[in-house]
Amino acid sequence: MEESIKEGLIRAGVNVEELNNRIMGNETLIFHFLKQFLKDENYTTLVSSMDCDDVEGAFHAAHTLKGVCGNLSLQSLSKEVCPLVEDLRNGDIEAAREKMPEFKKVYTQLIEDLEHLLP
Image (tube, rainbow, N blue to C red):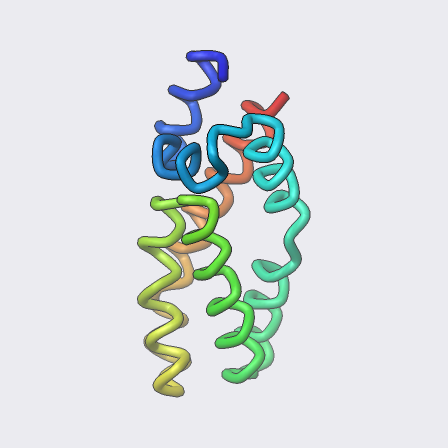
């Protein structure tokens, strides 16, 4: 992996070493999975579910995002989504709403970074 891409991913909150180990150093797969993340619909589902007071739908989307973040070592986003998952698991949509602005900010920045960095 080019050093500039690696450094950019690290700045974006990706634990590149962990991801590299998880995907056994296959750079093609790393880029493939990160590009697939850019197409993932769970963020949109989470936001629309929150807007509609759909706690179950929001929980499902947030929980899925949490898993994706773990699998792709997206530590910056994982840090934000984990508390959302717990609030929604407990049915506390208001607490989750309070966390959404920071979550959206981190998500948006990660997406912008990945779009810029990935070959």
